[in-house]
Image (cartoon, rainbow, N blue to C red; front, side, top):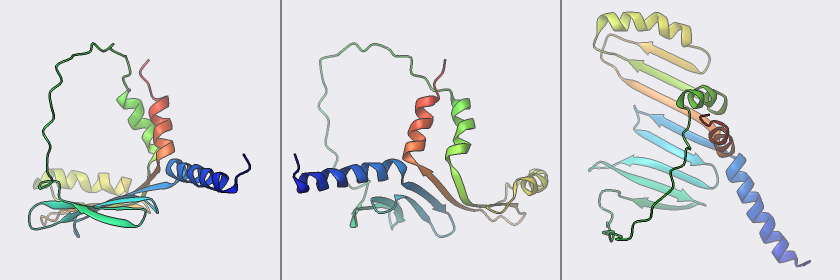
Length: 172
């Protein structure tokens, strides 16, 4: 049991598992530059890359990049199963209000910028003072009357925190 190779492999697997649970998850969206990305740094990254069709998904897993075109990928037909199993209904509903309320503790907004024109002059006029109340160091919301639409977001969270939030938020 004192095999150093086995101990080192198990240690690496444990470290990877801990990094997956407690490492930061980065979610970024920028409509001006068409940049959309979700990543667990050093382990996994996925980007939506615009192409002549609609878009491609560019993945990076452990520094190995590959691209998938979701609209041209070969789709296999699934065989229908004739045997039907009766499943016991479980009451595992999640209270959406509690989840939304608690998600503020789990999601960290590093940067949020939005420039919006609703094409309704009265609504835009009402949004200007509402946005000025919300604005702070990381959040910049603006209403304009010129037709510009822009959204930039940089969110951080941890998978372990999300799992804990989902486990503790049950409808009673």
